[in-house]
Image 1 (cartoon, rainbow, N blue to C red):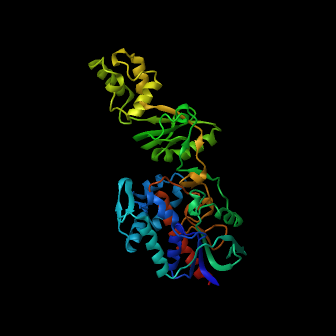
Image 2 (cartoon, helix red, strand yellow):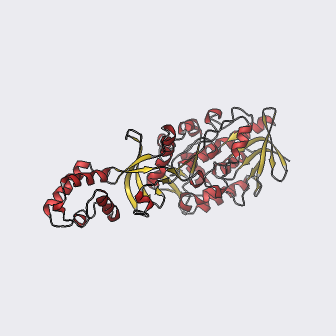
Image 3 (cartoon, rainbow, N blue to C red):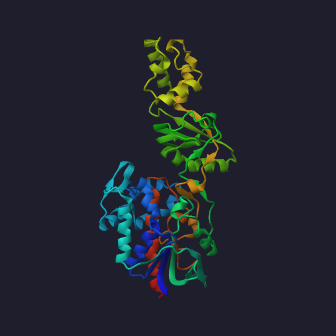
Length: 423
């Protein structure tokens, strides 16, 4: 049995690639090792499926700190606005939420998956599920066939590898594709976790003093060895039993990994600014004024509402201030050091949870070896890559899925064209 195009992997990029190839009239086979297609899509955006982001392309590239610039050509061919039009044509009405995130009006990820599966059927794409691939076969500098683990050999004129990275392994992303890429001569850049919770051995983490506490709209920074911020993100964060998490921390996590590697550090310092709209001096003067107006009032009551109560009590104690002490009895020096903690509470972190616990894989097939307009391999004729197997990664918020759908579209379209030329 010979196909024009075989797509390996039924995630967002693989589904898009199979549809794009089918729309070009190619005879397409989609192979997935799992029972269900679109498993990552079904759990994305908290089960609501954040299908893309409506920010301008420049902004989207900024939110893809891992080689986002590689996608400039791709976006000029098929953009986030084209993704929106594509889904609306499939009958999936979308709505825009904060920060440009686009969700189905139904709020159900499954409706997105179902629409893609219907489109595959319409285009008569064959689907093999529960069919793990053993290897991709190359002959004379071009793709030849796919060998399944049950020894079935299926020939194809072009092959798209869309098997994802190594994060969220329960959806089937277990890094299978790297070996097939290497066999074709590709470089796999070092893999590392991104969008992942950060770990710390600080005593207050170990004794769970702040476990479960969420801080809203806080600025979190990763500092270099000289104490200067490498990156800062202003969003929510959460204290956990092993360290810190939440959107602001997830976005900073890859910079923790990179800083540890770059400066060969066992620990990196992060800084928490709980009051990003106020200057330190402003906070200090405000507290002094409040204390002066009611000197007999306990400091914790004077400062009520300045910070979430657990964090307020924690910072008072960190600065040697008894929360029940009368404000008028506390030295200006202590008030000043407390004000500083509100702006820059330093926490030493020693890494992140492992890649398997990350939302996104950093590293992958080197983009230097991929044609940016087609997603075709520069080293092996008829071979295409798309989605997270590529060394392209972004923040959560619809950016990785946008990258997956755009690269999937290009890979599928061009694999179909290659197959036609080889006919």
